[in-house]
Length: 465
Image (cartoon, rainbow, N blue to C red; front, side, top):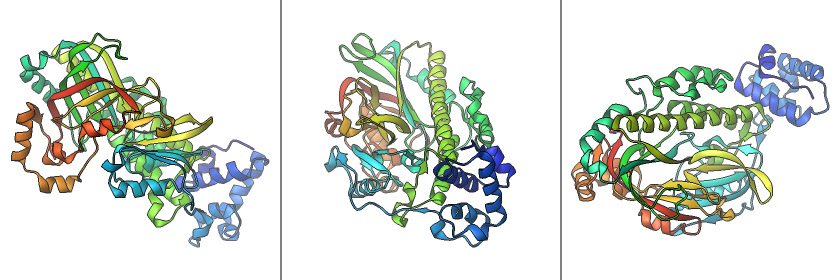
């Protein structure tokens, strides 16, 4: 089979993402024994006489891209399996029914291999937040999430825990000057990072168009529950960070890939829904075949968005440490909205973690609670039934809408005063009582991770909704 490039397809008149991805998918599946010349001739025929090819077993899918006589059946249409793939649930009593139902539906996808639901889980779009799904050679954009590469980053500094109390004003000013929150905009001072020179930015038209915005937003954070905070961390003996046990000042941040990741997610979700037809209730779980051009493009774009999210955290931590004269001793970080190629029961699968922390044996992670409760530094146990995963936080107990209706600014201020926490920005939508009890969530996954440290927030910066 010839190696047909996107540029070649565009020259033939396959100018839309749907037409190109559908053509590549058909070529990969059905043209393994044909020459490139034969394939190109076939593609020309289908484009020039689409109505005559609509009824063809597989070229009809390509023909439908060039005629108004598109038939639903020419696309890959799937039904949910009657028998669901195996699913492990941790802390089920803390998880709402809707989240469980969403996860159960995901386990009935024809491509599903195994799943796990973390104790912080709550309802989301497609896969619930806190869901882990292993699939066979398929990537589901909505099982990664809209905020690709959303992640935690914890920097342990060389300052003792007393630093915050003595320098609270300076910390507050540094957070105001060197962080930016919200859907648009970025830091006033232009940021630099090697990720912006990544050749992947030039591989697709979408990424080329997004590079300028990504540059403007480098080193900034989103809205919702994203934060940057200073706090104290107690490290326990024999911790995997390799630092002496004791109390340190630390920086903890939570955010993702900004507008770059959101645009990538929406673009490829639409393509997935167009080429992979599922029952209405499962449409958000549409997947891209990893052998298809669209699947390969998404994977490349997802990887870049993850690298960009990491770069944003790096700039935040570097800027804050430099301003306050702090030295970074160790950084613990990982994505919790991402997909990885991993081995599971001796077979390579695509592992989607949507609001779940990777917890392979010996792997470190950070699981936060809320703006007034502990975050835990943990080490993974590598439990196969959990697909080597743990929760990514405490998880919401109520929606933002319900939180806004349930709490007042006055009650939030009382909670903050009680916990001796200074909040910059923020809103009642992120009130501590809108979240599950982090102690119960940690307890429910005791077999998945071991605790190596306890972080308590002291100065918190968030977006003001």
